[in-house]
Figure 1: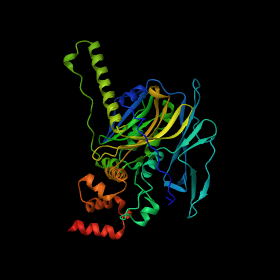
Figure 2: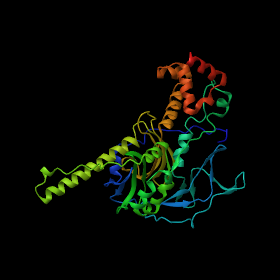
Figure 3: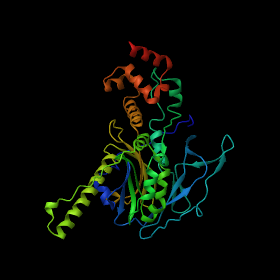
Figure 4: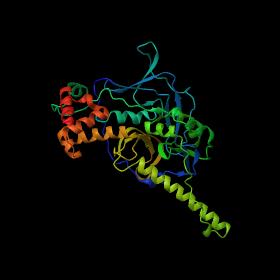
Length: 402
């Protein structure tokens, strides 16, 4: 990233909704299908969202995204999504392929390799179309977290930290094709009628949630899951290849006397299954304390991204979403999430606490109940040692040894 720093994003918590919002959006969890350590939970809509459709736009070259203020985001970006919506009462149709869409600027990289320089993570196209880079919109929000670095020039911080902040900031992720058994599971499992999304579990850890507005969109975008980004924890869990257990509870035989009783028990088990995953999804993905940032608005639809509360020792997801409608009537049309590793959670947590204490090491260390030297070494282990002056860091190391 360039050292000319972008402004810190403005986040709020007003968009948070509980598990009831998922059900109100018409999403229903169906029985899961398992393959070794992978569990896929289909999400089915009782009524598709017709006014918003998603289209995939494939890219063949590496991508550099100009995110503004002479700051750039560099990553492997296999495709973009194009959202197309109409006014109330009109039905949008997905235009598969790229024939109707203008191409981004094309450039040449330092070694002569073709690249694409894209303007913004989310950019309006001709007509009622919005092109955005799935998951990278969310990852950029995480990388930009307190990207400007120390706000006050305390003597502990290095000249580089004060001049350049956290630039360059980088994180590691794994392509879905690298997660063992995921590609096989996506290829083998059936797609349910009306399916508009999926919850991906690896070794019973929620790895990702993916929701689209319409079943036709899901059928077209289902294969793209192997090109998504997944965290280090998910990749390691996949390597274990531990078979997951069947979570379905058996029917209470004592409560069944007739076919009607059997039907009632089966329906109750299905409701319990849906409630379990709705609550798990709301608790993990939309955890209380999550912060949201609006990215684009158009025709009653809102594209936003979110950061978790960065609570160590529990699941934390970053992600992006589109909701359609206003207030209590808003429906979740699109969702894509990324599960952070414990190391990434710890980095976000440390930055969050430092910023809350004005980037003063002593005050932040006091909150943790440790010495200033111990906190400085914790920063170093988290990958932020370069932010401290070398002589100060050496002093803290010596103090810790003593």
